[in-house]
Length: 98
Image (tube, rainbow, N blue to C red):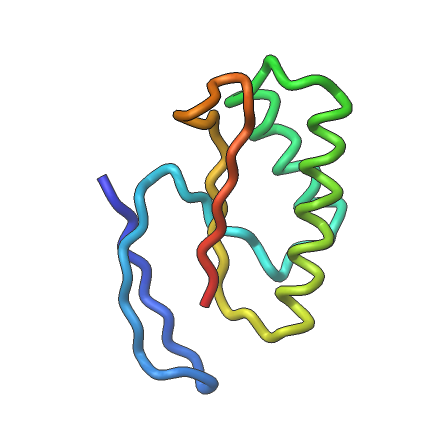
């Protein structure tokens, strides 16, 4: 199943794309604390075996990346969090940005 998202602002042309359902849109308008809380809930629900240190690392890296995206003028972002197929003990992430 995929998500079909339309992006149409005065800064862009109409664009359509589909992402796997595992990608979750990043709310670029949310306050940093709100984004961190939402990501923390996702980590606890989908990857409960992560240590507190691993969760903190993901949260801090995400806050940095989102800050850079905002500074660069990113219009849309979605994130994937999961286990690596190559090493099931490792976390893997991916981001899609426009």
